[in-house]
Length: 276
Image (cartoon, rainbow, N blue to C red):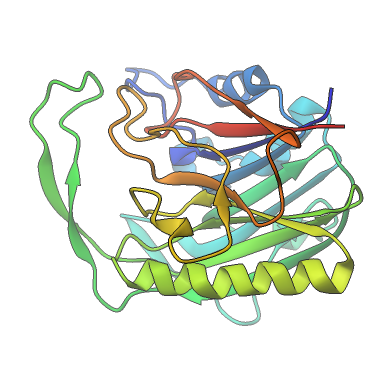
């Protein structure tokens, strides 16, 4: 059947359209419906009150029978409410082999869940823009509401890489929304991904919410975008923010998996299936 890889900005598992009462099982059911072997998730919660104080990556891994999972904390606390930057002495990566004390950090960031055995985990800190931006937000999940602007402060960004037993290195990230700054982050990230792939004898795949429209992630570079699909907002895609990139995957080595709205998040998931 091949290996199925999916990237998805979870919006911390928030239901779309919003529900009057929470459904703790909605996120797990949505992930299971995507039927993938490896997931790269963005906007992940880890023991935060707004998401039932659960370790989302661990819960997802257990629900699909995946041994390996990792969560890269971007901030400690809840974005948009109360948060701080991660201190140097705090864990860079929380994973299935972490000590119990590390598992209890209340934090937010990105994660990877993999049924494919992970040989090693890696983290790259990408920093944050010193200034935020007024961002346009869709009016409502029906697509009929009037768009509005809100000022958003940028948060620290990072990437995590999983070197897999099957010969691939998969890098997951969520880049800044500040134009120019995110392009510089992506340039660093691509070099880092290729460096890990070269040192481990693997092939690199980069995926995530890149906050870049119109295929900008591949302009003037050898990287190819494997999926072309508007992913935001999930109830009526107007723009592509989410990508899966590679330098050496050719047509025939993979096929695109198209997903419909899951009832969770304001982003659509995207995926590919690698051939055997």
